Length: 428
Ligand SMILES: Cc1cc2nc3c(=O)[nH]c(=O)nc-3n(C[C@H](O)[C@H](O)[C@H](O)COP(=O)(O)OP(=O)(O)OC[C@H]3O[C@@H](n4cnc5c(N)ncnc54)[C@H](O)[C@@H]3O)c2cc1C
Image (tube, rainbow, N blue to C red; front, side, top):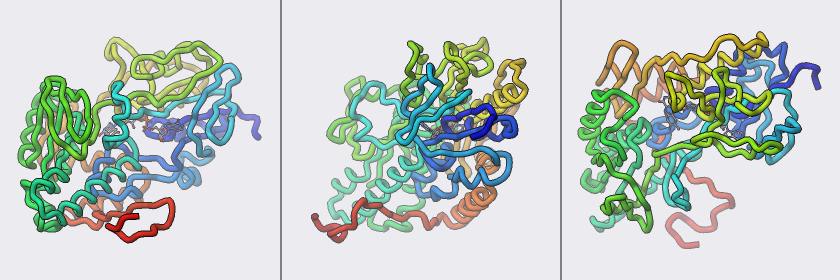
């Protein structure tokens, strides 16, 4: 126990970890609570899903970070926060109830299926490391099964991929599967032809990457064409049943693997001891200092917060840079115990990659595409990854894959709760 004021931080993502880094640990007793014991790097989840990177190279154990550097002095408890009791100033996880003086909610978002109940059981998603690994295993499993399948029609069914959502994640995962189709199949899966594997990317609006410039959208579309990805614009998925995707206009598409990247909503957590309501997108409405409106000594940062201002009347984009900048400013205010500077988002630009040498970047004063954009994308992501070991590991993987198109990561390693009784292919 310490006499210092206790700040509990829910979530050690971009917002949580950067907040803790800047917070004065001599002044505050800081406890990070996260359901995972590692910090992850969502922008590269699609590379795990497509066997480009191993999960360890973009994950960073909190306990290692807390031994040293700017996070030293903070503590970590594993826990999935289920309730926040604002009257008693406590949070409760599946393991314990924790008291706080100040609470910082930085728990990010989860998948949004827009009311399509049960959809989560049938689609694949990319919102966390386990989800990306699950996606990778399914793709590899399908490639192996298709290799053994003599029937052409059946092979095509096994390899019918649909990606829903033409934002950066959808474009990136569709591009990565397109690269597999174009460059990997003939090397490693000689029984499968490029015609066997079908990828369709679905976007509801009239262009891909709608948060970027129209030029970037056009270029992304062109790059995906090179990688043999079909793109359907202005299509909204209505349902996905029995391997058939049905669109709002009645069109149907057969797909055995649907990857859902179409929407997010704030992480659910029950707030008790008040009649407080969360805002649109299940986000916490905050003032220009990230103080949650209607709650005392509670702050929200990053994706789960919603700050409406003149420049962003519907709130800021849910991006890493917003989370990091908000986190640093809130730490500064709490350190000084005064709220002076209102939050102003400095947009450093946005980018997306569609494969090797194919990327688009809308930077502050310049638009880049092709190799320069791709190199910029790699540089920006490399410097943002936590830990030198991880940076080196990612860089080595990328260099190796660039030179050889080869990776040792196309490993199909399933974990089982119990030891297997049967051998692969046999019925239990
Ligand atoms: C696939 C993908 C690709 C992306 N690509 C980009 C990109 O290229 N550029 C970009 O700027 N942004 C990108 N984003 C968005 C970016 O990742 C987010 O804006 C950023 O992560 C937000 O940071 P955060 O700290 O608010 O949330 P997160 O980084 O999501 O962190 C939330 C943390 O809270 C923890 N948590 C969640 N719920 C609980 C709970 N109930 N109890 C305890 N802990 C909990 C989680 O384990 C996690 O550690 C991408 C997102 C995804 C999913």
